[in-house]
Image (cartoon, rainbow, N blue to C red; front, side):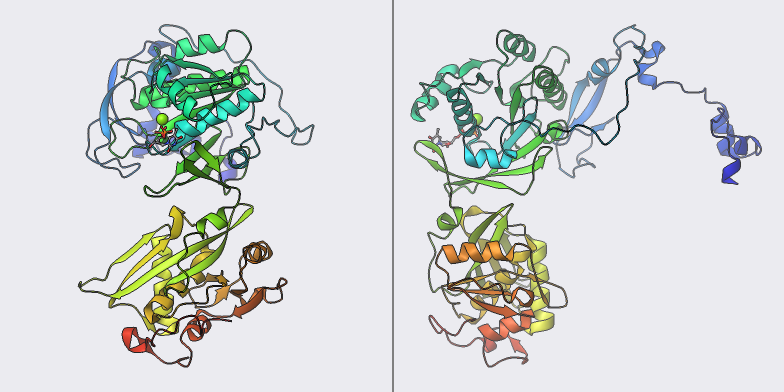
Amino acid sequence: MASRRPIVSDPLPAWLARSPRSRAARRIAVQPPVDFPARLSPTSGMAKKTQDFVCQGCGATYTRWQGKCDACGEWNTIAEEGTATERILSAGPGRPPRKGKPFALQPLAGEQREAPRIASGNGEFDRVAGGGLVPGSVLLVGGDPGIGKSTLLIQIAGALAGAGHRSVYITGEESVAQVRLRAERLGLTALPVELAAETSVEDIIATLSQGKIPRLVVIDSIQTMWTDMVESAPGTVTQVRASAQLLIRFAKRAGSAVILVGHVTKDGQIAGPRVVEHMVDAVLSFEGEGGHHFRILRAAKNRFGATDEIGVFEMTGGGLAEVANPSAIFLSERELGAPGTVVFAGMEGTRPLLVEFQALVAPTSLGTPRRAVVGWDPARLAMVLAVLEAHCGVKLGGYDVYLNVAGGLRIQEPAADLAAAAALVSSLAKTPLPADAVLFGEVSLSGAVRPVAHAPARLKEARKLGFGRAVVPEATRGAEQDGLSLAPVATLADLVARILPGERGGRREGRAAAPAARPGGGGPG
Ligand code: TYD
Ligand code: MG
């Protein structure tokens, strides 16, 4: 049947024409043949003034207001905007659509060149960016207000200017005097960064196009920018998107690397950076916990590099300092010998990272016990709890469970399952684990401990930081390092039996199973 269908179809396909009584056939038959999108058709060239309701979080549009955005699930983010996207997208009032010019298509094989990079000299930033800034690329750096985005980027602009590149910092949030004040605090005033407090994208592009093309342009922030192209107020999705589009076009044309700052907002007052995420080459998020000095730069998307690298900084009186050895920092405030704390040997991109997992398991006074997680995936906690219950006889139904990753780090690896489980059991049993042990391993739903990638790198880092033993998946046996002994476990029940010796295989429930605290000893290995 299918082979008899015409390849170039008439307005009415032959198979429909043969059954004129079908409703679909009649509906299709009255449609005129469509040659080009209605938006570009000569008759609709006039920009139509319409009102749209646009989600300020993700940019989804609706024809009428509603409380919840169906696209991103946020509440109260939809606001009315006079849409002007029509004007950008259409060929202009009354102008016929441009005739396309044919271009040559290329084979897959051929000359290829690594994108050249401009290293900023800031090792942590360059690593996350994929080895430096790519000329003509556009980066979006998102993060909560006050997290340190402006501080980081004026430092990067300073570093590039110091290396002899033209680097321009445009602020739409602060005055020139405020930026100067910060630069003074950071000791950057001697560097030839060119500065302006401007918000009109047309003026900015006109200025940047004069003289030598800048290597780096920082726009702080994209939400304060506006363009004459569209009529909406600054900060709306339409403005943010149109401004970003113009700046991206400038970057590609001029070959400058452009960094856009975007605030993450919850209240929907100004458009979130999510609306430009798909337009830029890389999206970096700058994160940190309120009470901590550590800041983590993480790539969420990168067309020119890996997305699992992180950069670690410390906010000091003199700006953001690179943290070259994050494991040492994350473990510096460890409480040795406390039940419920273990050290996880993790990986962030190509770099091993040791971090402390802390658990508190306490009898609940509520009908439904609480499960609270900071820095780890709640779904994985639920899974580990289920496996502990189903395969290890550790019942935590009557207990509140709190799990925290120290230092404000967010761990995403499944390799942390074993460490989380050990912290939970250690807290429940009030038994501290040996202070010189690290753990890693993925726990499967059957209770088996599965191997994880980069075991040698994890062990080497543990060795470097003075750890003496490692609890690892069975498959990692044999990867011993000098001075580091391995304690392979095949199943989660094995690990539980080592933390709670003498109770192997027995059902244990909560407090009844918890032996008295035995400081310092009896743990794995
Ligand atoms: P900022 O870069 O203005 O944040 P953002 O641009 O993301 O809104 O950083 C503001 C915070 O950083 C502010 O709370 C003060 C702190 N800070 C320092 O601790 N040390 C410094 O040297 C600087 C410049 C800022
Ligand atoms: Mg700022």
